[in-house]
Length: 252
Image (cartoon, rainbow, N blue to C red; front, side, top):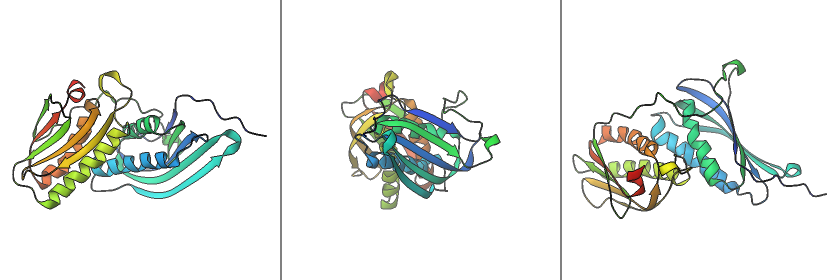
């Protein structure tokens, strides 16, 4: 007898975490419908999320994957991919990025469970809502939002940059762009999730690096995350200006 596939619907998010900006070991389970399941999409989202965490949310510690399993549940028409990982110091709200990415970029996503390995009495964080006490990051460089036909992020340094710096900045920008493209940030002008597609990384000028997009749409949260990612880069090579070019980017 054939099992009935679950009806399509919005993805649910189940959260059990401790408060505070702390290191934590977490089990993350993403449940999707078996019909049309794309395990590669779930893996891509998890990989982009952890690379984003490594690039800017915490330093110098890195996310360490300790286990991964894939379990089909044909009787229920579902497919569950589970990861266990040790995360460096980060607030519970950082996992909201993963929830947005899963909901926006994994076909048939039904449920995301994020549960910390700790005494159940301490797992008091049960949602990933916006933090009303969040403040704009204080950065040592100038930044500007400029209207332009071609969306781009332009970074100007105080001195000519080395190949090591070009590599480091390109790595950070690519991690950030992957999270943005997979819907990891809120969208611009009330849209559900961020979107974007990188067309090129231009390092031809001796003091500049430009990340060019064919399209980009995101709210200011994405730029805050980019600025935070660039803080350790600035410690390596002083940044003078971060310029955000585009239409939707400037309206966010």
